[in-house]
Length: 87
Image 1 (cartoon, rainbow, N blue to C red):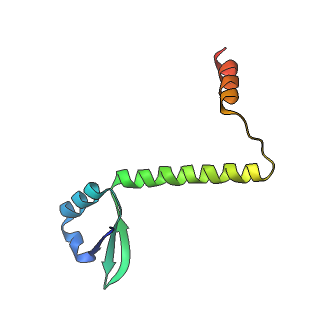
Image 2: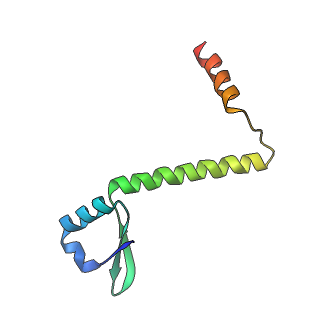
């Protein structure tokens, strides 16, 4: 369940920080009853960036394959790379 807190709760920074680290998910901050900010721990932010980067890489690979790209057997590709780079 997402955490939704009023902006006045930001006065207690230690409590907000502890809550963000404990839940490991974004906290939504409202102002006058409407969404205003989203805050999260650095760990959660970095995880989200890594997930987004992986999603982009997968989308790019799917688009490349759709445009006539080739599929390679993983074992063959890894064997080829080992021979090329390790002798």
